[in-house]
Amino acid sequence: MKKTTAFFIAIFFIVAGAYAQKIKLVSGDLSFLKEEKVVSIEYDYSQMGVGKFKTEQEYLDKKSEEYNKKESGRGDEWVKSWKNDRATRYQPKFEELLNKYSDKLGVEFKGGASKSKVVMIVKTTFTEPGYNIYVSRRPALINLEVIFKKEGVELANITLKGAPGSVYGGYDFDTGVRITEAYAKAGKELSKFFLKKAR
Image (cartoon, rainbow, N blue to C red; front, top):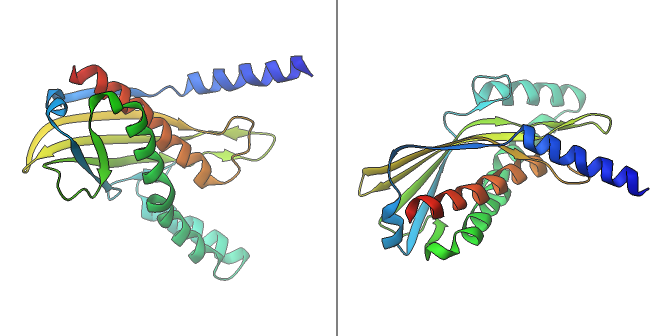
């Protein structure tokens, strides 16, 4: 039993390592974060590819058609859930982990913060939903472009590629669970990056 558990733990870390994300400061610097108390977050999914599909709409059309053929209306409900998950699952988890690990900065990152002078635009440019069919699984992955602006002037541009999302133990059969974990991972790693670069 112990050997089996150790084996699966080892496999988990090997898989996680294979999908390690990369963060790059494309332009600007993050020293301004030391002067801010609140940073507003805006989310943008308008130019996102999904899996093998160039656009999100192509992916949604394909999946909804497949589900509707199996059961009338199921595909339409699935599309609603896909989009609703952003505000109810992905964004809250992203902000939770982002704030948890960057609290030493003394900055609160908050969606739609009206009193903030600095805006952090989080653009999801790619989503790989992944899958879990018991005998085989693949984690979700997301790519982000993060742009900081103050009064319309760009302060910094950051890219994050390959933030993985899966649940230890394999209980991530729901697509939303995997993608939520990818946003959690992205929030955690970005916070570490902010701390390092803002000092």
